[in-house]
Image (tube, rainbow, N blue to C red):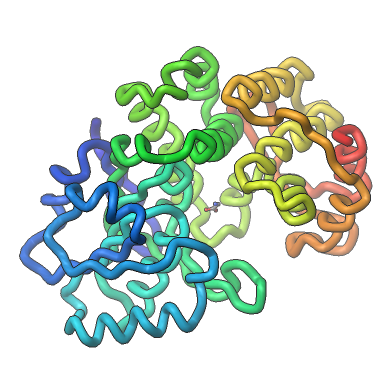
Length: 342
Ligand code: GLY
């Protein structure tokens, strides 16, 4: 498969899909290499790591703090990491966030690449250049946007993931198909069994096409002033559900996708059958089962959304499957969609 290339203002990123232990050789040219990973990934997959110094961090949001970052900077000093060194984050979204942040700030930026090991990180977190750490309960409050030089997606890493991790990643893939690629959406609908059994060829095509949607959006709007907001489809209601019900991100986003598609129908932009297709495909991969919610709490969380400006939230709507645009939605309209859901 040909690499996908992202040419953005903060850097050029080459995305390749295949065996990471072979592909990594393209990017290692005798420089010092430091891998940042977690103990689980190391335990199952160290045989795929390049020859490198390895720094293990605890997997989890609790690692996205200034304290952990300071420890990493100190390790870099100990290891004599310099501007010619290469940092490789091997792990899920949290590893990408942390490795991205330290590599971008240490010595004002050193070489960086990712080998994402969850489906969610492969199709979303590893690409687009966002990184960040948390402060006082605010997620990713401190961070930068800077593209890694390469991302390698190796389907073999997905085999040791719990099944629900795959379905959560698929929620984002379905979102990316819904906002930007009707063919990918058809492909998912007709290959559900192969996808769930992680058929290599099917997964590689799925990851490739899904990333292509995100890369084309990021290339137009790296700093999220317009086009990139499309990637938030399903996330306004999804985040509110995640926050109030403590549902996992992927599960909450799946519910958000269906709920927000109803807004597109109400606006006359999308047919009811398209929203039903979304619902059906999410159900077929095991999401959206038993949706029971407290609407007052969800509406309250939407009112606290940082994207809100007065009575308006700027968010994406679908114009059918595979096409989207950003519009301003009144809070009342959004609340109507939540009422329909509960
Ligand atoms: N995950 C959404 C974005 O990268 O913009």
